[in-house]
Image (cartoon, rainbow, N blue to C red; front, side, top):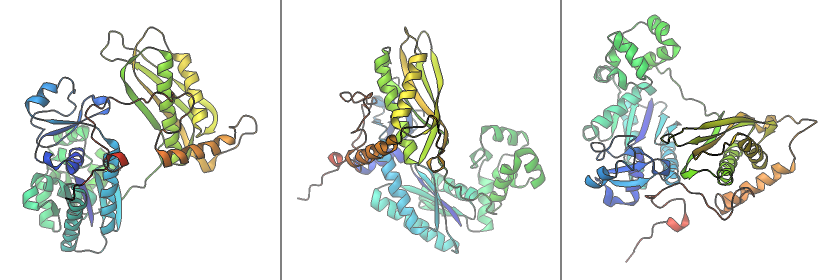
Length: 417
């Protein structure tokens, strides 16, 4: 059987786990630089739309007693890892689907046994981490998603765990689910299906295999089989990234090339660190600058950088990116955003040495030393010279909560008296 564990209002729940006085109160979490709303608790949904611009919504926040948090990705990432670790204890295989969701597989279990396992997972995540989760279990991944939707709609009746274990339950779930709520069916496909008078998931399963394959390709056919209870959509292998990017908006608009260079150097170094972490190297990069989209004149410039050989060196990547930045930079504009994207990525164990013009072999040893020290002392402790050591660039995070689980200075203290 397949199952899915989905953390309820994950970002808001992570904040509540360390501030239980916020349970039942409306919470929103903002994007990078506190730009817009990217997460809402169910209590906040009636008052704030997803994507609402933060500075325009201040009055709505105040009037409705909404608690506002800056995105605390260090905390959310660590809590996600802990959830995945707990799930792994109970299942035969696990596939993290997003930061707050994971599919799992159970071999040779009955529906009753699967339900008990789901309840154990739900109970331990709540006891150990204080995070509420919904668990859906069925014969396939698509049906498990349907079961999870039923849990979210009827949390009290299902007690946060639901198993589609019989044919009667499968048909009832399919007839209950609107076609636009089926996992894997997006807006365009929904429109096509509705034009064919397919309104429920059950209607989709009544179509012939030949018709589904002809109109919706083999992907649509796999989904149909999954909804029929024939597990066809398997677990996906985790692949290394084919592009690595670091893009950020500046807290304030910048016009000075030196200031922008320092930012872009930091982005390039961040990309290089991610590249080394997945044991890869790249042959090129793309650097871009953008002005304020809502300003009088919108400027967007960018260009490719070719290194001439595959590299993962922060020195090589940063140097090439900054040289290209100086070439494309245009005076007289104020810039709000910049970014670096690494391309042509390949595993570092397939590196081909060039007779004329390869990288200095000392770079690899130096990068290993830098990564080791930064992992030990904290990210960003050791920098390149083109990063201003006196200046620590930070995103605008006026509502940032402590990093309770990943920073010694932020660990909560308990009064045992």
